[in-house]
Length: 354
Image 1 (cartoon, helix red, strand yellow):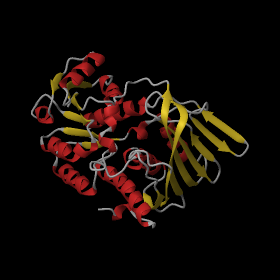
Image 2: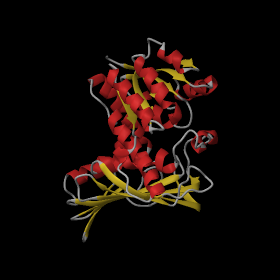
Image 3: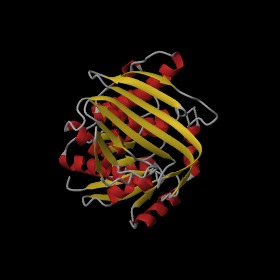
Image 4: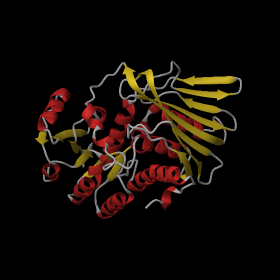
């Protein structure tokens, strides 16, 4: 194909971050918007100064011969049916993370991908966020020697300042439903962190965990998960805290991340991602008496722009964009293994989760 004709399915909060990368791509046309509330889709069309076809049902999108690909920005519990239907209809598919709510659903998607003649990927914006990409470049160049530990810390808060997008609180209703989700932050947000750790170091091995559960199903803080990377003398830690009385600076969501990669010759810090809590350069390398800072672009939305570009460019070039279905399934297995490890008090292999 010479151009990608894209339909965005789901016009809620997250489309404000996913859509711009497609809208600005010189070889992508957003030809359709779909939402159960057509007025919301029409409002997005006005905001983006486009004149797409507007649908209220995915089946209408799949029947449209003028649509080559779909970006599914729908609740996770809908993913399996929607992804399978779109692939079976001959559309290229990009889906919001996580892949699904269970491994049984993930396996249905794997089977659909195997029989499809089109491309599937899960949108993982963290893999395109410039500070995370710069850290990967430094790590691969040997800037800190052999890595021994990766820690990804997330602070979640009740209040933020500097928010640049409007968020509908109703988007949290289905996320707070344990009948539709296997977990909260360690599942819905955590897949970003496990994907980043795997991108930097490699496959995640047996996990141990302590998971706190309170009145808010989403929160799951304080919690910590630890593991050893397969085939590496390197450990991984993902932890979450909740600062109910602290105000975070964030243009987007009520969260802030801090990343550390420790190595034999030094340390890499990535000091921001979703939020902007610290007045520090985005990437810092510490080597004993030497500290080097890198002021790379650090707007969190840039990761979404990169993800959109990779999907379009991948379709045009006939190559697989990240994440493919197998990587996405592994990222789903990690939080499910974390919950099992917390429940049983023993280490759990992610691939044992079926």
